[in-house]
Image 1 (cartoon, rainbow, N blue to C red):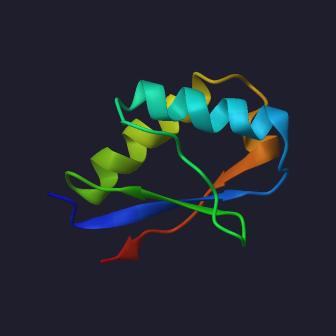
Image 2 (image 1 turned 45 degrees about the horizontal axis):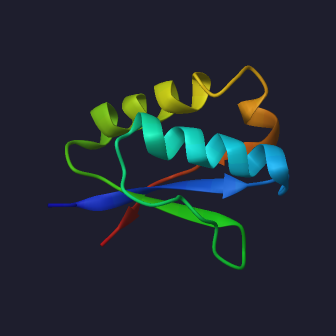
Length: 80
């Protein structure tokens, strides 16, 4: 059960950002794609504690390539 969410911000929308989000979803074992809302934010539900979930999300982003931070920003969590 999710206890909150981490938020990604797509700061450079386009094909590469879509690739990064798809890779991240796969690495995290998520069903379905991670898609930004109209403002560019992507909500990723937490299933454990904040620190462990953030580390797992950051590792997944890092494995998408060294340029991930040019396209996607890991932001603060949102409580549910």
